[in-house]
Image (tube, rainbow, N blue to C red):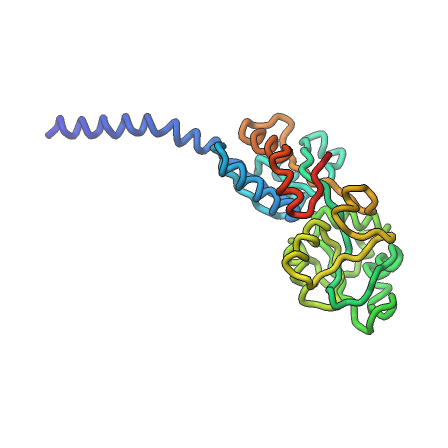
Length: 274
């Protein structure tokens, strides 16, 4: 009986010693990604394609905004961050970026809104509360529902610079975070106005015709005009990592910036970097 027990115990020990390195290896192939809600759907599709290849990586993608993605990498909370803006100089001293795609930021309205275009001055007056009704800019007699983006969203900084108004001068009716939240708000409100990713807007228009991007400075808000550099607000979509990448992070990043995902980038109405 004791011999049987001893043999069973030895069998368990040998199995544990054999399996432990495999478990450790599986743990080491996990990659955590967080940040920009604009880049997240693309990152998820890239991750899925890589996981379905010969790679042993298991990749988790979470949103939260560009600033969160960058901060998470700096603090070691994520392996890779997602940002829909270029790094600030103080961030560049701590982390590095890898461009996955280019995108633009457009002002988006409900498709029932007959307004054709708004000037930079009109947009600034709307977001600062000086204009509150669409009839004041040539539209119908309808209150404007001004939607701003939450702190830490890259679009907020880009639009603030474009409009030339301070954050303290913004007078929004609603503050929204995720892109999908913005889309749903505009779809359900014919008086709504929000600024949003061109790629997200074009992608959503394939699913629904309830939203429409306005031209800026006479230039249509399209991926094509982002590509040719004529649209006024263009930004990079980047992955953010530590200066020295781990093998698993390096594998994901190299795949994400390669020609192997160009179809995924363009399929989401972004522009593949040249």
